[in-house]
Length: 465
Image (cartoon, rainbow, N blue to C red; front, side, top):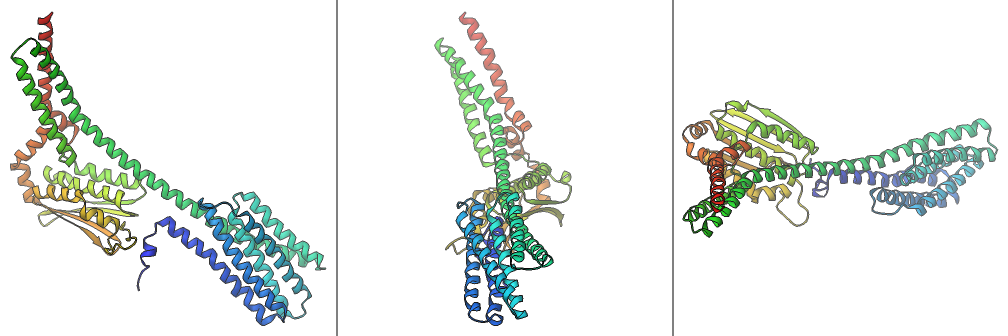
């Protein structure tokens, strides 16, 4: 069995709920015609059956139009359809009254039954669709009470017994109350789904903003200290140069060295060459996704026994996968699975957030496929995994899901952590990764240089004085 087409799959969840609700109210016009209009042609004698059928059809079309405009008003795209609501109310009352009068005058049981059903249907459908455009629940209750009381009063005016008039009022009250409740609940559901979707997008933007702030703090920790040392050494070099001291050249050489080191650190921070903790990233990914309204499950082995290089590489896979889910997909569920099998570590990140392509794209992979396939994020991850002899696979699976699988052999990870100290040392020495790595990596050069600059500046000022 084929699933829904791209037109339906391409809609967001709130848009699907709105479309379903809108067409449900449109279908009431068809139900009204088939349930209360067609029986008139076969059981009510001419000439009443013909024009009554036309009036029922017109009432159904007017009700469908009013319901559609009322939903637009709920969404904030149109003004409140007051004229249509008044017109539907007047037509419902007049058509129901005519049906009630003809049913009271009818001699045949079938005719009275059909006209009575028409009266109940017109009143119920009319009032239910009118309530779509009313925001005050008290007004809805007043309207229901007015329709029910008016039906009983009409029955009494036509000479019905009080018990029959009371039964008519109760029947109209029950039918209109149920339909009005259904309409009000449908409007509330559409509004609530859109509000939840807006809140989810807001949480996702806040999560991304928080990550940017964290990146900014890391950049400040790496660069801020070096800039302070450069400023201090430059001031010292100026003072030495004014006194024609040869130490000025040495200070400027030191400034040049720190500036070059800062450039390298900035490039590495931007390109993402920082140490990352796998356990922290797994916990953080689950928290960020759940805060954005995406269900996230994390299942896997204990990360404590994995080599540091392997943990760092896989941690970046988790971070990049989480970012792609937040930015490029429409996911409702995401799973992260970590397994150690046959001498290798396998990390799988899968979500159900592929969107259908809009118009004329022809590729069928949606936003996620385009962003992931050609983006620099996964290319950077492949470079990271290559250092530890790992591989990365990414692509859609099962039509609506996207899966990222990273595999790292443990033997390579062990050798990388045991014998690849040059790579690790360069990272820690460059001051990238965690705050502690940032402090220990470049503090030995720039902090000591800063201390020397302070001492030298004091000496120069002392000599000048």
